[in-house]
Image (cartoon, rainbow, N blue to C red; front, side):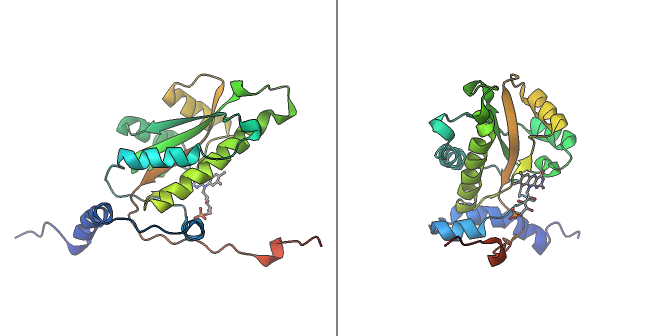
Length: 198
Ligand SMILES: Cc1cc2nc3c(=O)[nH]c(=O)nc-3n(C[C@H](O)[C@H](O)[C@H](O)COP(=O)(O)O)c2cc1C
């Protein structure tokens, strides 16, 4: 008789279920910071809404210049949209596998293009993105920043897929899902990059 389920396949099915069932032990902030890594392969399982809510709340807790909070978050679970974006974005092919992606976008109407601080929207949205990525790590999810801004073609592709108004500029897309593999973080500590001014 044909073998329908290999041990490898069984593991792929069981892993996310076990992850879902197990209560994530709380880790301290330094552990989460150092364990965060870009995860590009996901299990075919949806991310629960409460986890999405937790990530968005963490994102919006980020600091912003003059507390303007010039951001919008687009939560994408629609399979067709995820596939369309995977097709059109050269370095975000993992979207075709991800059950969820969040676009972090800047609302440029919150600033004045003639002012020096106009591009703070990108810095503010970057701070929000890092918070979101850390929250994903803390929740046992895999995620990564895929770049949209400042590439004109990528901005156009995302704006079209999400029907964005011209004043909303997508900074990135964050594919998110339960990790398929046991990805490890990189050790980037380099004391040579630290200059002391005493
Ligand atoms: C601004 C920015 C743009 C990025 N764009 C992409 C991208 O388009 N595709 C991708 O696979 N990874 C992208 N990454 C993820 C980086 O490749 C990744 O962070 C880097 O290799 C370090 O690995 P780590 O995140 O696991 O520490 C981007 C990261 C940043 C900060």
